Each structure stands twice: as structure tokens, then as C-alpha cells.
Length: 341
Ligand code: SF4
Image (cartoon, rainbow, N blue to C red; front, side, top):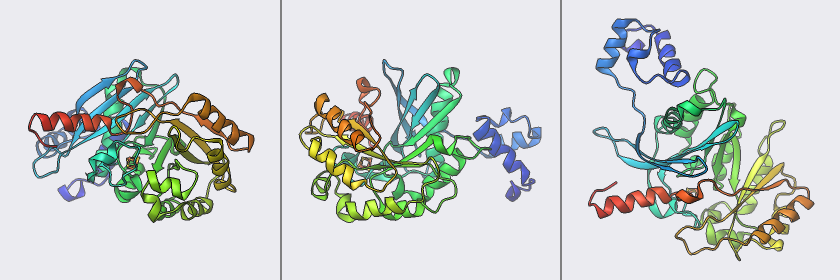
């Protein structure tokens, strides 16, 4: 605002109007003088990611395919966000990169490769689109999870800029305890996050009980093996009532035995940890869903050893629920019609 000859506090007013009041038309910003509103309408634009497609699930989950970077001179990309309504809250899952370079074997996004990092605006924009599109039925509490496409800690600066707006009480005003960032285990990123004053809860995608096993499904483990990763977790300065969440995608016959469960207990010794077991959601990849009984047995071993452990069946199973499936479907459609992403 100062750069265009306006008082600086106008910047704070516009910030509040966009993020707290979610007004995306300058004409609706009644706290600005009429002449400024007209000028902004002529010279500036507020743009949200474009909804390319909505996939509605019978449980109320809405999966969005969103288009970003569509103005001249930008690099267009297709990403995914998911809106999950619950009784007293909604959870919004967002992407931090278009595609991903980390190459986890159980993940469909990995097959896209990395197309590009998302900007802070494109990350915040996904939350705003999901809130706007479900405006009528919103519950008082919103949770956000950075678990869509991409490795958030490999796009650190944009992710933190977005989180500062999303978690700002004068911005989108999501409580930091209602936000979670999920990483494949980028150790320098975890160490950086540990220094942040305002930060989301941290979730680590563990998925294996030994280096040998983890190397096979998460090649990033060769760079940051379990010992280094868990040492960074042990040093992570948890606040009172804060936990590290370990996600464990269960792959039938691969990492779902009681011995695996016992090894996981050992790995997590001296870490204030919770574990989420995620039975593999069948997709196009050559991996199997685990048997229910194995999942429950695994859970029992952890709980008996004092590690809180939950089974999380992914939502929206009937609308291609594995991360990256929607983008793959879009890519296939675009290729067959001759367009490019
Ligand atoms: S699971 Fe996450 S980090 Fe791994 S390839 Fe998929 S999007 Fe990337």
C-alpha cells in the first residue's frame, strides 16, 4: 500500500478482509475508501485456485482438482485438496508441491515426479477455496493437514509463509494445535521447524520397522536413515501436551507383522509418540491391503507397550482416496485429449 502512496494500515485492512473475512472482491471491502476500492479493482486482482473438478464421496468428503498458475507468464499446474466434514469440525488436506520428487513406492503422486513448488499464495488459496465452496455447512473448528501432494519440508520457505497466514489469529485464524505437517523425514527441515515460534504439529511418515525395509519403499531413507531421523525426533523440543505423530502405512505381508510392531516400539523409545496405522488404500500400485486382523494385532502390540496407537481408514475411499490419484487421472485425461499440464 505504501508503494502505491497509501497509508500502511490499509495493507492490514486488506489482509484482514481477504484472510479473516474471506472477501475476494475489492468492492466488498467496505472499510476502504471508495476511490481506493475502484483503483484496486482496476489495477490489482485477488485470485484463488480454480476448481477444475469436484469428486464428492458418499461420506461427505469432497476431493478437489485445482488449477494454479494459470496467468500469463506463470507455470500452470494441477494439484489436489480434500475437504472432510465431521460432526463438530472440518479437516482440509492441502498440497505443498505439484507432484513430488521423494518417490515413496506406495504413493501415486510419486509417479508424477516433481512439477514445481507451490507459492505461499497457492498453498493458502487451497484452504480458502475449500472453506468458500463449503461455506453453508461450516462447523466452528477447522483443522488443516499438509498431507496432499508434495514434501512440505522441501518447499520450506513458502510453506512457513503460508502457515504464518493460516495460523495468524488476524489471518485465517486456525489454531496451531489444529494444524499438522506431514514429512517423509527430511532431517534438516525437522531441525529448522524445531526453531519456529509458531508451528503446526509434526507428523512423520515412518512406514517401516527397519532401514532395510524402509529403503525399499522410501528411497529418502538412504539419505536420512532411521537413526538420524529418530535422533532429530528425540531432540525436537515438544511443548506441553504436544506429541510427535508417526504414520505407518500398512502394506499386506510387507510391514504388518507382530515382529514389525515390536521393532516399531523399540524405535520410538524415549519419544513422546503416537502412531496412526493406515491400512493401505488399494490403488493401481502392486502392493496389497493388509488383513484387518493383522492391523488390529499390530495395534495391540503397540498399546500393550504403552504407545498410543490408532487405526485410520482413509476417507472418501470411493473417490480415489490415495494421494495423487486425482492428479494422475487428470494427467491421463489431458494426455489423451492432447493437452499438457
Ligand atoms: S508420500 Fe508424500 S513425500 Fe512420499 S512421494 Fe508421496 S507426496 Fe511425496
